Length: 190
Image (tube, rainbow, N blue to C red):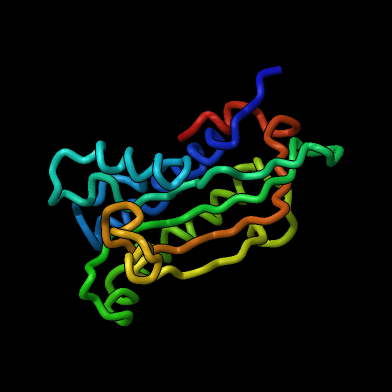
């Protein structure tokens, strides 16, 4: 049996999230072409973002972005599910260093990040890839204004090289069951 990879499950969920929310995002910023997806360790994602942009002023070529950070743990001991996962996902969008917290709220969080977050939770639910009860997958939500600020994180520059605002989602004990009940066509992407 061919195993479905978690990174591919998230790719499909993000693609459907992008389709769902793009018309709303374009009204805020017509340069937004999609909600992009990436996965990996921080340095891997940072390097891909640096290489993926040809025009330094065209920040919308890579943002908004949903990132599945590795390493994530997949416990395979529970019977009846593919595994039980602990994952961190970030929704990121560009900001400006000089923005106040209120400006970040009004210009980034409310019009961009929050609609993506809501659409993502809907797509997680209807994907059929995860088993949970209630209206949304259980998670911890953390707003990250000015995420990766060198002064906050004691490094030499922004974590991704860009000034970003974001929302971190920490999924704990998320039961996956994409190889048991869900037709593979549902996970192939949008």
